[in-house]
Image 1 (cartoon, one colour):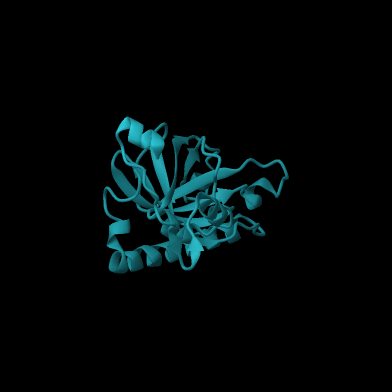
Image 2: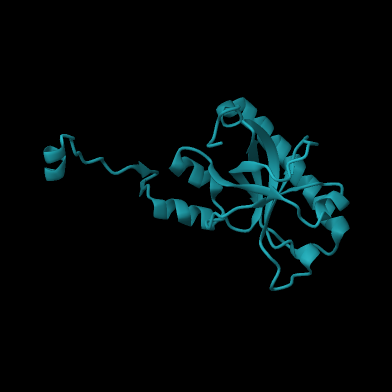
Length: 188
């Protein structure tokens, strides 16, 4: 306060912000993300949590399953809990709906302990080339935990169910919260 008076600016105290009876803080946001509660993190932040990074080449497993994915490389250290999410991928000022897997792909990796963490997004209805592009990936809703399936056929069936569920979610958002889907929304 004294420095403010000396330098000619006013220092004030901001009242504590609460959400559903709990204090809003960076710790609360981190805890919600690490628990996979991205919808709660969105409410605490006032916007979707997003990872920024570059789309890189993967090993083309998704394309081989006829479910191509964009693989995000991000320097961000705070990655949401492993699982499958409804997301928005922002690139060049445009936002695209997606289904994102954060995890080690246990069905593909065979459950290897040293499998690298990947962030792979199946961009709904998109057929362009994203390699080398800078993007922002916004997390809207957690669909399920990542899990190991008996084989690729079972995995593909589940991914198709995830995509169908994502389409229903995005349709619901169009009705109740269209601003979340609008161009220029989010942090891109």
